[in-house]
Image 1 (cartoon, rainbow, N blue to C red):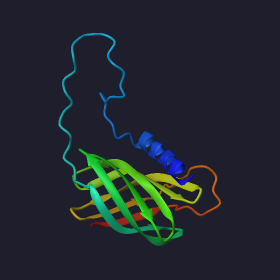
Image 2 (image 1 turned 120 degrees about the vertical axis):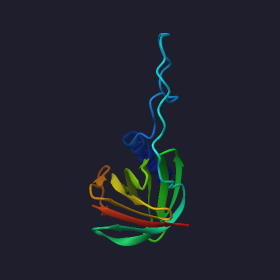
Image 3 (image 1 turned 135 degrees about the vertical axis):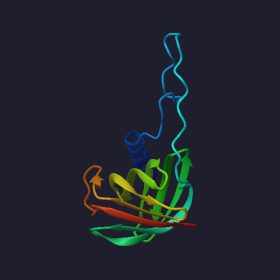
Image 4 (image 1 turned 90 degrees about the horizontal axis):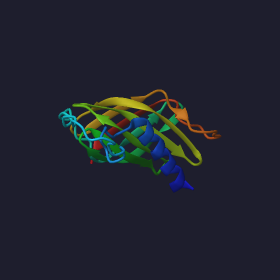
Length: 156
C-alpha cells in the first residue's frame, strides 16, 4: 500500500508543480506547417540542490524529526524524496530553484495519511532552510499531520 500511495502523492506534486516546459514530449505534434517559434531563451541561473541531504523537519504540532533527502535537478527543475526512520514519515518535493532559493511543493506521508503544501526558502552551497504554512490533508485521516513545516538541511 505504501508504494502505491507514495506514487499517488508524486503524481499530485508533479501536476501541481509542473516541472516541465512548453514543447515537451507530452505536447501533441503540430497540425500545420508554418513559421516556427524561436527556440526557448536561456534558463535562468539556479543553485545546484542535487545530491543527498540530512537534517530536520519541524512541524508546529508534531515533534521534530531527523530526515534524509535525495534530490535530482535538471536546469532549475528540482524533484526529490525524503524520509524519517524515527517517526516513519516520508514524502517528496518538487519545484524550482532560483539563484539562492527554492519554491515548490512538499508532500508528507505517515501511515495511511498524507498532506501537501507549498514550501519556499533559502538554499546555500551546503545548507537549505525551507518553510511552509499551508499544509493541506489529502483525504480523511485520523493521525495528526503537520500544519506548518520548517525543513533545515545540510548537504552530505
